[in-house]
Length: 135
Image (cartoon, helix red, strand yellow):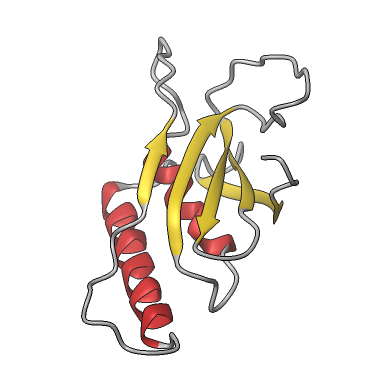
């Protein structure tokens, strides 16, 4: 059972409310509206289409965000496992797992690994950690 469009819309609304709440708790009110974080999805083409989609991965990854995190400036999604830029990693083409990186206005980025649960078919968070330096 995959994440439905209704669930994605609900989670996107929840993220918007969370971002608005965090922004409201900031140091001083601003007359400039906060920009929506840029979302970058890996453009790898799969045939058949991927089981895990960018939208489902980002939506479920938002559940791993710490309470009152800094403002998000960008969100990145890619299939497979994260590989540091300086490392040599085996390229494993998979459509049932991936990772989301949240970059904040301050502090370390957050790496959230996501996968399709084999029992339910839903996207789930497998773990999260600060993105290792250099990432």
